[in-house]
Length: 129
Image 1: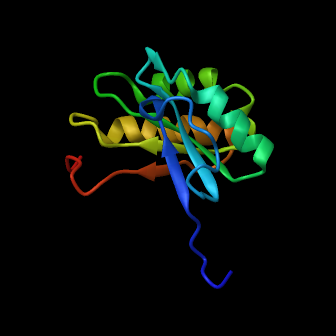
Image 2 (image 1 turned 45 degrees about the vertical axis):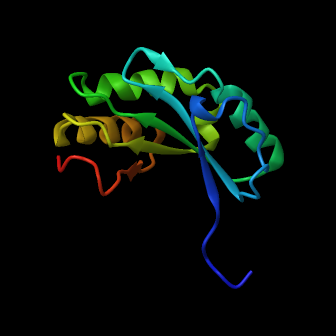
C-alpha cells in the first residue's frame, strides 16, 4: 500500500446491524453511548465483528450538554465492556451547548483509567465551543 490513509466507517444505530467489511473499509468506528442514558443497541454486534476480523477498532461517545464529562466517561466505560481494553476511545463533540470543561473532564477521566489519550472528533459545522 503506497498511502498512509486507511478507510474507516463510522457505525451508529442509524446503520442497523451493519456487516463489517461490507463497504471495503479497513477499520471500524462504532458509537457506544450518548450522554448518560443511551447505548447503541448494535454496538456489541458490530464491535464483535470488527474484533473477529482483526480490523482496527475505535469506539466513541457522543458528548451531551448539561452532564459532566466525567459522568459521561464513566457511562461510556461501563457500556464499552471488553472493547474498552482493545479499542481506541473517541469523543464526538458535535452537540451544541457542550463546553471545554466537559471535554477536558471526559478526556482526563479516560486518561486516568486507561492511560491513553482520547481522540476528539468534531466537524466544521459544530458550534465553536
